[in-house]
Image 1 (cartoon, helix red, strand yellow):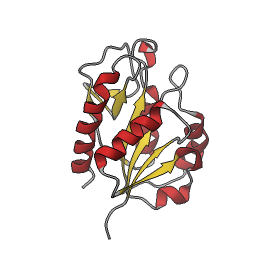
Image 2 (image 1 turned 135 degrees about the horizontal axis):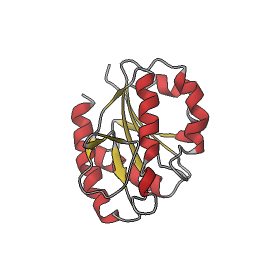
Image 3 (image 1 turned 180 degrees about the vertical axis):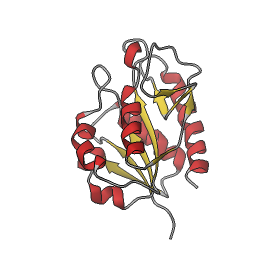
Length: 169
């Protein structure tokens, strides 16, 4: 049986939805299923082996409400054998002290539940003070800054998706 991949994002957002659609296009519509993060359940997570999660940072370094609401269920799950890649949006100039923190927060929860993280990217090319998504000289996912580096998004997404295809196999 082939492994199933889900991309989970809020269907009601603007920027996260656009980046998610770029990821789906780069992946190829076959082999990936879109799931609305606002309708996430344990049953949904049990159906897939590989996950691409959208975790935009809200306010001063917080998870979006839909993730916050699902975290208690997530923390009760055994995610061993499942692989997760996380991407998110943030503003490295306006929120330099907590740039894309939501990615790091969600990554920590997934690891505590036994899930494996893939899709690390270099911190090169970004200017920020701190980020919970940073571990050494890499981020634990793909950080997208549509406010200050929108022109770089397409290339970053394309490279990241190629990387994920290798790491998910």
